Image 1: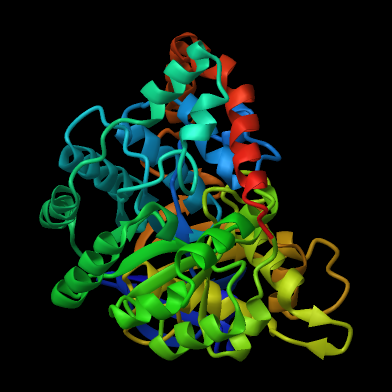
Image 2: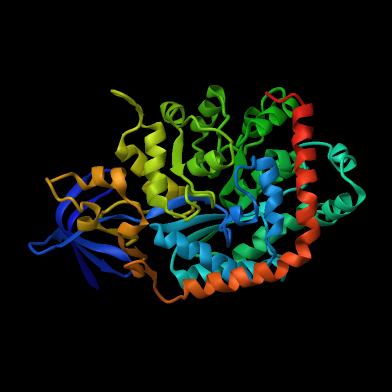
Length: 474
């Protein structure tokens, strides 16, 4: 048992003063008041509804200012590394940034072992850091290079570059039945209260009708959640309109894919009629503001999503504004862009807070919690109020201070399931600096073996860009 005494506390529903939280068996066992409190603010831990848990920053391999359609291929310059360390590092950074739960959309397996062994290493990393995760098993069966025929792209390359690209990106994809069986195997091996295993098709342009129908059926049968990308870029919007003239979202509704079990990441280019169908089905939309800015994808219509009744959640997508997994800054950016202008309020700070505290937990398969309440999971974030209000000129609402200036540097403690995961800027029980050193050394050592890919990239990216321009998109 532990008593956490805080001068201030709040969740998306309300605020507390001079709060005494009793923590026991991983839950909030009692709520009371305390005469002597620490000068801290306590709130539920943030939940990241969409991420990929990348070991190192993509801009380190030239990924800055690239549209998604070329940026994705840049990630191949990061060599496969130990999946335990590759997961430990981003989850530790997430914890430092206030995240108690993270959705990992695992679309790029390291492939150094069999898939289930890799998943077990990832789950062990999450356990050692101490955060909850959803582990989404990536599924795909088409369009490895562009959204459609990649022949013209290859034809535009010189023979050396073509051979390099074919070797890196055109390996045969496993049969669909085998990919679905992976999900069952991983769920049996690592699923549990702290790890929610999900179906995670990469996105509509990377999956056949047969794949989507099979996933819809499997999710309905097993009750497992599904997470995928939707309408992240204007090129994906154009592809969907050409491929599904009667409407992709309508098609997904017909096959039963739309449901409260479905999370849709991005929806930057979703239309009002599609948002209405998404809302009616009870799907979660994971909004990834910084990622959409960094990859030149656009600004999602979050206020319109809310007006249509969509359940909106905060996502980081492995691409926070400073590539540092700071969910506090990301929450502030989400509200700053979508809260409304002038006196026309669209989304209140508390509504934005609910996206990060409550709806995000639904996406990671841990819907219980996200509030300061008796019996709720003890997933809590403690901020240093004095550091948050260094000027100390007046009694200012700490919720206002959070949206004005909070970043990971204000995190005093992160508690997940009653366990202290972060204290004073340190992730307890692991050596994050050593993990980063090992990852950087491994990737640096592998760079000479990727020299051919590095040389091929400029011509390949130009050919990919030309392929989308030829389609006359948008």
